Picture (cartoon, rainbow, N blue to C red):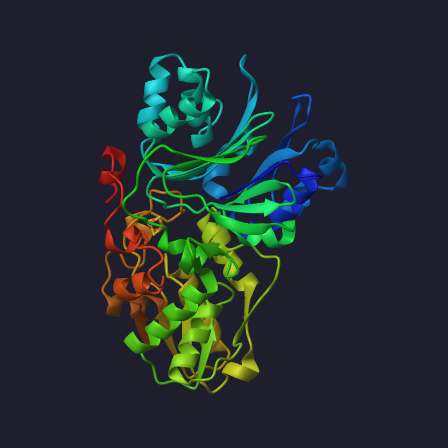
Length: 452
Ligand code: SF4
């Protein structure tokens, strides 16, 4: 998922629309946008599908005002259909407000039970709705105290944007698991799950929202509040490895630079004798460049991605994922034929995609396919909003390296170590690597513990 917000920005809906395009990689199942005009009237439009298929000129023109927020969503969240597409809008006697979130609460069930006991009726299964109910439960005069109280009841990896007629709040979980960046645009401000949205919006990156911080944008400017003190910073390693765009900077570390360093380290840890290095487009290309530079083996474009196809990892159904692989990648026969290929991928989740790519290369004439993965073996599910499958579905949860290699049909298989995954951040953060190591940065609740 990805969230965007803008305060005091002219043509805010058009600016958010362009920003959404640069967050499209974070979710392709649905998108929504909401704005307030000066009279406090809220305008909202949501839809299922890609940003381009949801918004057009006439829709953008109806979203009036100079404060707004938007989001893109992926499969699991949109299971409930359009009702579950953010941002969510709430009427309240103290003023209307809008909420959107990225990530996942690990104690959502407990909070829902708590709210349920006092008679709350839910319209969606989203964390944003829990946030809205918790904010209004206290109903102090000062809204920031209500938000702080709500955040102190929440646990997990998340970011929230909350918008009223004249104020925008940007909140980040106290562990710093989910990214959230602030930019300056003219006299106003923008916030985004990733800084790559700023370029197309014409904004300039200022800084990241800190773990445990609530940043408030209003007519007094930009103000910071802390709802929790964090000693550690557990940015999600998968953001650097796969999810984020290479032109994003997250917590001081550029995503492309991270991946290239991971690729260099991967060669040092798992060298292969081969004629060419081929990266799986597109999130693995930076790591493939690093592997090629470090090894001296030439980098070649042995696979081409068909544009405009969704990312396999975030499509909701296995059937769609399997269909998707063939439709989205083509081998370049004249390049791979007769060659020993080192194939670099950012990660292996189920292994079904990996098996198909190895077959594609062999069918195109590759004599050997040595699979190298620029992250550790994924063995555990994520509880912070990244849509990883259950333990049984993960390739490596119950397989040795040799068994995993045989399952995907490669000549050899090698993974980056957790130590090198950490070191590839250049010391900016010590990332969450729970899906590789099983060491979760938060407490786990009964439901999560049953799945490990
Ligand atoms: S468990 Fe994995 S996917 Fe989830 S936040 Fe941690 S590193 Fe990211």
